[in-house]
Image 1 (tube, one colour):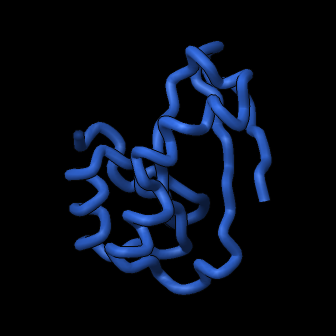
Image 2 (image 1 turned 90 degrees about the vertical axis):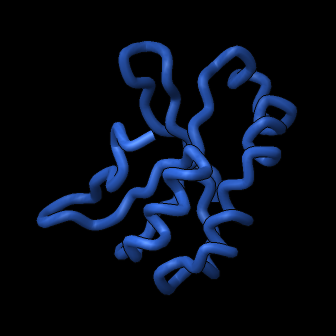
Amino acid sequence: MVREGMKMKGFIRFLQISESGLIHAPTQSQASDFANPQRLQRLPDCFPELAGETVCGAVASVYLDPSIVAFLNREHLFGIAMGDEVMEVMNLGQF
């Protein structure tokens, strides 16, 4: 499923690409496959309106193991997981 979110500060567009098979906390391999930088670079081919936009990869789950967050930091991908009350970016400003 692909769903477009809001523009934030006029220059970043959030695009959600969901994979229903990713039910459990993702493994490093799943996180790598799902938010592959080469796949992100090809997004403007499928969505021309994203050409010239900043595209940031992210992996979201109800829970992200700290080892996955460390992996996402190395790969410059955002990790989004459930915080105390709402979904939060777990590694904001860490790379």
